Length: 360
Image 1 (cartoon, rainbow, N blue to C red):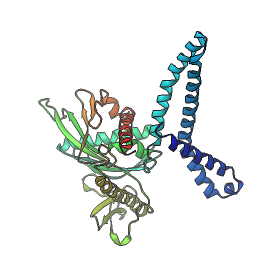
Image 2 (image 1 turned 180 degrees about the horizontal axis):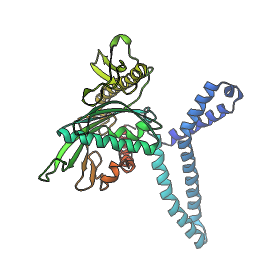
Image 3 (image 1 turned 120 degrees about the vertical axis):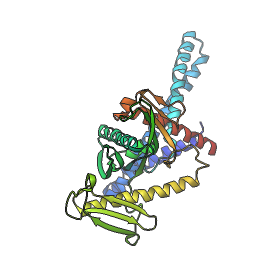
């Protein structure tokens, strides 16, 4: 097997970590013990799968040894066992290949989600609101926490823009492929002749990062405080609790008026700013590596149309995966995103495996 040597090294590393965890001296050093425990936990799944592969492979070899038996009944039993075990071995190998892929260090992070109306006028703002509601429903199913930091309403009840923090386990891993342009095809409520219109909204999914990962110098930002406002510009409160942060080197502007506390609004705005700066750097790196990683979506290219939602046909099509069309748009819009997310994850894992084989 191509990755046998690598798997043996991983198993040896796991055994060494297990021995460390049993060392009384390490157990007394909580910081080191936790680090060792986490390192071992990260290897557990692949080691268990490798040991299952070795066990299954051994069973096949033993069964093959019985094919030379003088008894026909024994040979038949051996053939049946081999026919049963070989597909199982192939399945285990495929699973191990996926587990051997380098993990995205951002997969366990919470995210900043931004949804903005694109082409299509007021209909686009309504679609942006429905997209955000779709993610909100999915977040509820996953028991994630959602906090809206910025919201710009349209005159028809949609969103020109909405930004939210979504916190919980593996948020980025599950939603990272949602970045891009989402297109909708349907008959708007305002359409009198029943014609299908096309409009769009853009989605950005960025991992939340702390000040250690992205440090922002105080000298690089300008902070303005103002009274928060509601629809139509009406004043919500009379205190200067809303915050606008401008990052001078890049021109990025972040506002937050979700909280009544000036301090809390500034903290949330800084979180969004750091995430945007982090995403800018990620996109720059991905652009530089585009030729080597063609087909990967980590950059979340906003200029690319990634998905079409066709309401008359209850159909949703993801354009990045050949043949990925689901005739369950009604369920998708209610937050039942797992079939789409699972298909995208499998596709990009396959693409990563192809790239790994080319460079191996």
